[in-house]
Image (cartoon, rainbow, N blue to C red; front, top):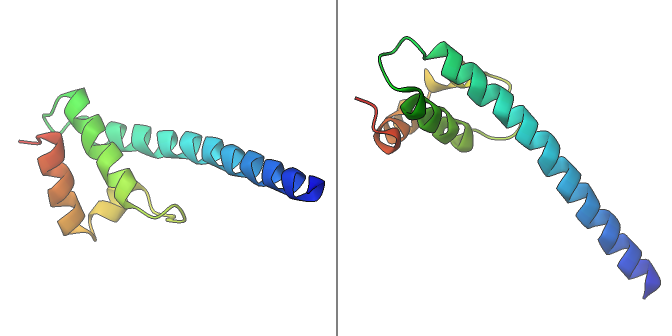
Length: 87
């Protein structure tokens, strides 16, 4: 029983630490996307919503930036345009 508890504690701590690393990586990708799109005539809030949406649609092991990835994923791009209110 004790081994099971220790195993569960270790698994939970690993999952939490993985989420922390993924979160900081996601933040960097979103910030780069916002920078890449700052001259598109949209508010910063609209661009951020769009970039967060696109980041959410990408797999965690994607190596392309959001700006690169969106060029080959027009369906996802259109969905995020709509969600963000991009005009």
